[in-house]
Length: 345
Image (cartoon, rainbow, N blue to C red; front, top):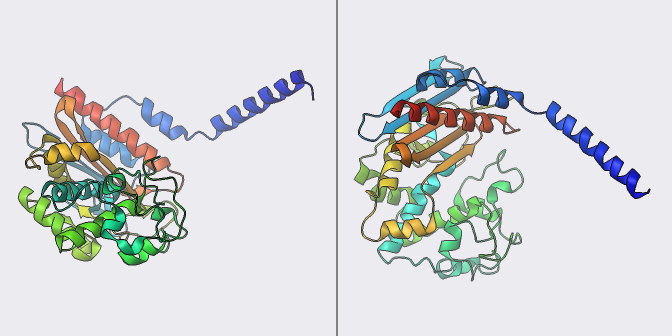
């Protein structure tokens, strides 16, 4: 094939690919993004239910004002219980913010060093996790360890592990994704190991340490370590597209919290009132000040917006395989931020 014909074929292929991609664009995302902003947060939350979410909770804490709570849709679709802004919600990876604070506190009181290696605390993992003697605590906090992500292992979401040991076993012997410090890969295995480390060093369960060091000083009584610690009637139901059943009883080892509890924690994290001494400097050197969470049935966004001194938490209890629901939730969140920003004038 001569160069001219080859170039023409490439152009035709690209044109066809473009047409096909446009055909399969989830236009609901574009449509949602282009809609005029409503006047109030509650209107936007109500509109979100029309996009296919079963239920939504939003918490808005503007500095110097009483926090506002919003909800729409269902807490429980089957029994027709309306969404309740005080419901408990599985916050998934947002829990890593609490984990990073726990590590910070142990480093701050000299119980740990960020330069400690994995084998310094878990010598039994030598030869089981590649480069275990080179991976530092700092690398694990920052997802730069190269340890494979356990939630990417086969059947994790359909057959979740029942305990830490079973979870860790799923990555034992797997090759590293990269040499320690040479890359970045979001890996839940890092935080599984960090949680086990907190337990080893503190002498108490991971969540009990978080409760003592973070929750109790902030007066937070509606944050829990797992679904086994709560009345399930207080938990917002979770739904997955194509699955009729409520999946809130499936245990993915997620913390639970109300939007208000999470919002109070997030403000304390961002304004520094959570920290003592050099802890804020330590924390700032290792982790972020906002996070999102996503597990089947539950997606959450927790951010502090410095320009308007506002914490906004959004909980949505509907997910899907394609990820459209996540993209929609992000668009809705951004629209809520703009409504709040506009109201501050």
